Image 1 (spheres, rainbow, N blue to C red):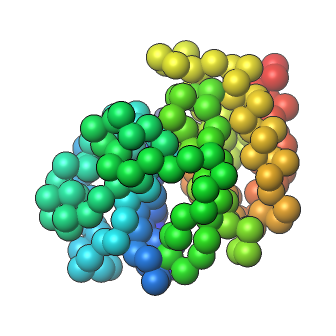
Image 2 (cartoon, helix red, strand yellow):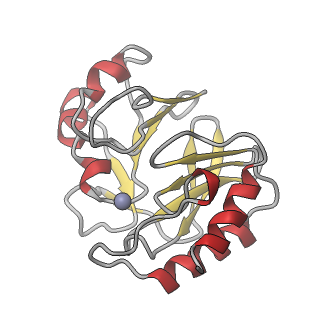
Length: 190
Ligand SMILES: [Zn+2]
């Protein structure tokens, strides 16, 4: 089961997805709210934390989460203080009950990953794309629009079937999410 723990939080934070199952994991840690309390409403342990990237709004809750659950973190850039274990492009990681392919998708930030589960069609897209053709800003350090466009296209090409797009900000898309991905690919070129 996938829950967005930041869904009704009014603070400068990313979404925080708690995925329960064989490997109970968080996708992104968020910032500026008490994630530990919200995690404990559902589970008493965490096996892993996965990071789509290390912008402050996605990671600032990590110290409290690490301390409360003694959990280690996985992300693209092991040089980051927030990443204990590196994940390479194309690597498979277990999130909940499913295998997800990690796709290195820079453009918003150089260490950005998306996670896509072929068996279920679920994708965690971080800040690459958002609903209704939104896409990650490219004006921050390490951002680049052409690179972002290539990453959106690469995600599109990697996907067979998309049933749910869980994005870093705003609502998840479960109704024809492939349309939102196509819109983002177009909008990012304008
Ligand atoms: Zn970001």
